[in-house]
Image (cartoon, rainbow, N blue to C red):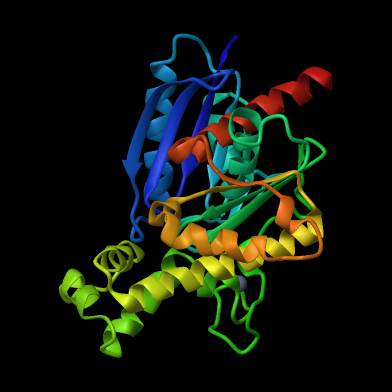
Length: 319
Ligand SMILES: [Zn+2]
């Protein structure tokens, strides 16, 4: 037995938790972050959180796992770039935390961490080859091959939100046009909701938004109230995510696909068309591959970070 620290740093919340090695979360601190936070302020918030949680630990934590939104260089323990947190740019966060607290740190992209969390504690336990997709503000992915997180040469594998669907489509932050993330994600749904209002196609959504910029949540609220354009937008998104998964399943032939993220709150409206498009595939492995939702809920990233920390301990024992 022992304790590790798992932390999940996303676009809205900074979460840090003490977690037992079998995955039980003991205590957790959550702090809000905002788009306007400076680099320095984010580091202060994060180190403050680690300070508090380490002080409250019944014993010294063995390792710290960090799951962070964006491009992460796990070898250099650095956040290279985050589209949702401007302060996270070329930030050697792992090194800063390791030096300050003298506890080994491992850091990964949050979707890769989620894949490992699901594999270690959640829905894909017992499978050797898994694909995990995080469906939130953006779309991320993590791949486990033969029981190991597949990272690729630069540690950037699994960027499934940047599968190109329409080369003449909308400009994506990554440099390409028409990526899956620009067509079906929390931010894509928000943009599409705005367009529906501007075109006068969504009076219910317009009244929900009350003059504010609509969100994906508002789009869903309008769909629940039977707004046709909102329903169709979400269904189309589910279909496109499903098509992305078809391509990936045909490429990787995983044992199982797991899904997490805030868009799952859209329930069957999003998920049914996703499944449907996968199930009509006649050739290849897509039709038979189980596609299931996370068993770890909103703790997917935190427990993924704990799994990263545990992996690190396993490796150093063997070294
Ligand atoms: Zn892209």
